[in-house]
Length: 209
Image (cartoon, rainbow, N blue to C red; front, side, top):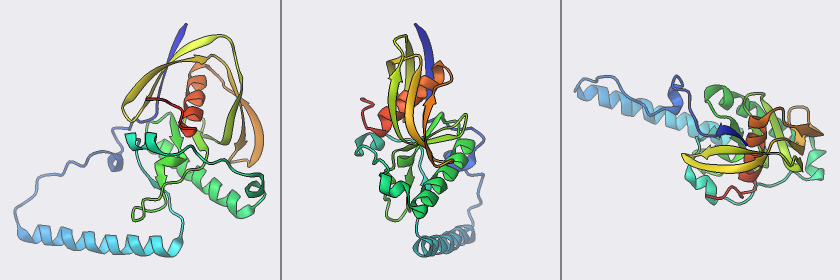
């Protein structure tokens, strides 16, 4: 049985905004701290104003164990699929996923890793994930075929590791978010089979810890 590893919560070491900040040496001048406080207050004011005026935001959060406690993701309905404003919103989410994939070393990005604003902390719960290697975003993904031949997948999310026996070849029925059309997608290799199976279970909240 072949072994594959997929990771949902790795970070590029070069990506500063996702790392714990390590400040350079600071002077003890009280003016330095006053300046920092003033700048922070100004930035916070404009961020709050921006959120309030522009509506939906996509604030990315790295994987954490609280994501295991959320409800199963919500499927896009046929009525929503026909609405242009819904299409625009979901494709906007996929664009942010594109950026998050570039900014991290994740194999998969999920909709529930985004909140609408840091103020309300309201998490998105769309049934959408992206495979970072190919930047393919899928909505409403359901596994419709699994091969009999199995592989052993080592899967990780938020530092939690699980070994799962998966099918070597997997086919999903889904909505291609970028193209906005229903598709069937066959995994290209064993690693991708691990990633897709892991992603669908995560969105359905069935990846047991």
